[in-house]
Image 1 (cartoon, one colour):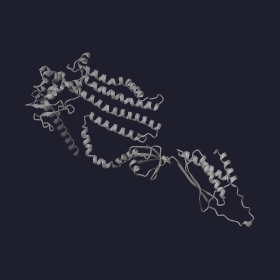
Image 2: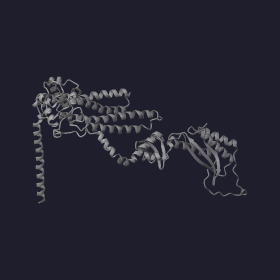
Image 3: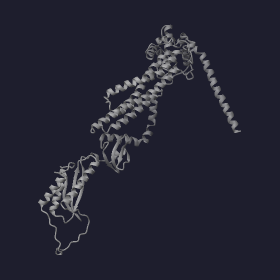
Length: 546
């Protein structure tokens, strides 16, 4: 039973829907028959458009929609009426007769006047009430010559004569005549004809301006990717300029303009993105040549910021092309701005953190930094976060807002790398040997090519619990960890070899038993200073540290 009830409801709704549109259609047809009365904006517009249709072509009747007090002679008024129709067709301005006001007392709610502006992008074209009738205004009539010259910068009548037709003749097929079909074919195949030579010329021009070498394959590839969207962008601009020449009906022109105006922003974004990438490649090359250049840290930030701006501008460009009110969109965004700001506080904080890092330059790409549990090499400084490669070869993504608040130790800015240790000698080491050993260590530091010579500390420092401690505090002149580790190994080997050469033992925690001299054990003979110095000189010569 419920199924039958739903079926009956559907039928009633369907018949009501059909009846509603039939009533509206009948009402619209009745209003069209009263077009000569000019009692509303609808009647004036329909009278003008209807009598410019090739099947009902009567310019004298169409001219009645123009204010009779302006425009000059009847012939001139007819010419203006025709030109106005061509302006509408050439710019894709078609009337939706269902939406045109049919009330004689219609009043614009914004201007508080009896005027009707059908196309906001063309405010010069509007209708106004004069007495009891509606006409195209004086402003519209005076603007027609200017709008016509702007819409048709070329001689369209000459093109019509060449193709053996005229825009006032009857349409041949599906509402289009021969000139329209020729125009559609021309507009479809023109991009295919122009693309290859235009792309080749632009690539040649960009390579010349950027002084691109033949061996720079990466830049050649980027140039090729760049010129493709630029070529298509220029072609679609040309297509948009050529659409009015063929005098398509307004609805066809509207669709053609919509296609070109959508594609232009798309290719513009791609072209600008390609330019940004090419510029980033150039800046990166400059940074490699001169790492200390002032914008070395700003390159990633500049590239990302420009790409975001390009996309945002491209979106607004596309909205404008689709006749969407950009001001209204921005107003809507501003209303929700508070909520967005609250939701995006961390993002904003990270952006300001990025700006702080780029301005203060506490570190740069390639530096080794440590900060509150972070330890690794900086690989990339982004707009939101910094990427750090740890010594476990993992990646840390640290938000710039947090990183800007941390105490960062930039180990990558070190000019020298410190090496400090204690060398513990056994307590039975003779003082002369200790002095000679210390002097030998100093000579190793002074003669090694990767150690700092003007500042180091090697001294017999103190008496330990199990050893006589020699402080060994030096600095390496190296750039990488690999060099530091290798140099440290070289120094340690030299220390061991010097100790063996001087017959010096290193101490470690032990217990020593001392026997009385009466036990008969002969004490070790201590060498003289001269013998020790000879041993050091021989040792240094053998190690190539003369």
